[in-house]
Image (cartoon, rainbow, N blue to C red; front, top):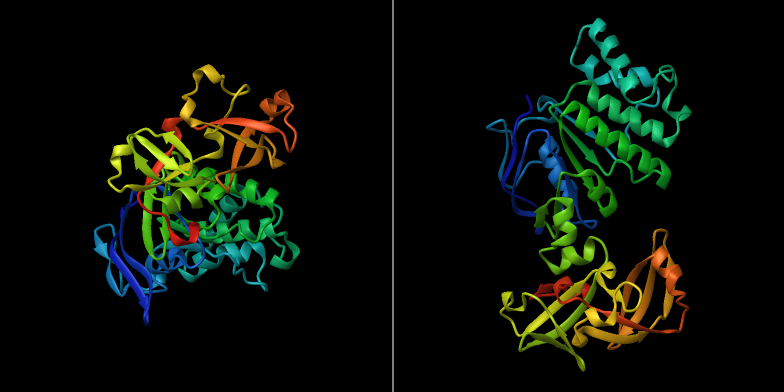
Length: 362
């Protein structure tokens, strides 16, 4: 049975640098959790503390009710897969996968059985006698996964495992990892700076910035209900509007937008975020009669980018560059060309409202 893993007011400093700043989290047994954030936000440091390669400056890491701060990595019964794979070049696939079991002095019969099981699980049967240099990047990553899984870890930790691979292989391995985790029912902790990876894999995402947790939520809630302006900016795309409250409206240059739930923010100065897919093109995705006229604006299609299922159109609003997305079929219907006038609608309930905006986002 998987055990609960708890971070309790964990802090890690390196001299004057605060890498992880007093964070707490309870990871449910069998959960797939992603730590997501920009480079240098502290996510890998957390992973290293959980595995035992670093010790917390203060606070506790608790597994199955026991504080494990001082337990060495080899005694933690956790599997870890690094970004660099770290395979032994002089060992075959078979021997790489068996390495952890040999170190634990498992009986040879059990090792043979377990390696065969892993090879089948990861679609590596037939590659047993090959060396890492004879494998593709995707195969090497699967061997690294197999080596970590061979010891039947209670918790598996992956540190940006797919970042060195090309896009197609990354997508395939995402499916492999998700399926493995679901089939084996193990707790999986995944560190990435790739939002698409986190959104597609995790049960819960922990968004980090400057050593702190910004939001811990399901992928859907992270995307649809970002709690801070940083989360709204970092996950997906958002257009930001800085304005002032004025009788249920937000004044933005010479415009006044009606905004739902405006009274939830006490400050006069407010920051609105709206996702590109939530802006409507009048005459195509909404009719003018269904619009609140204060939230209708006129602009020009400055740039048109085709990005697969959607077409992203850049426009200028009060000297700010913004974007809206049209489903590809709707774009074809519209016949819209660059430089043409457009009328857009900003639904009052599509705005996220914040009382602050991070410096880097302004």
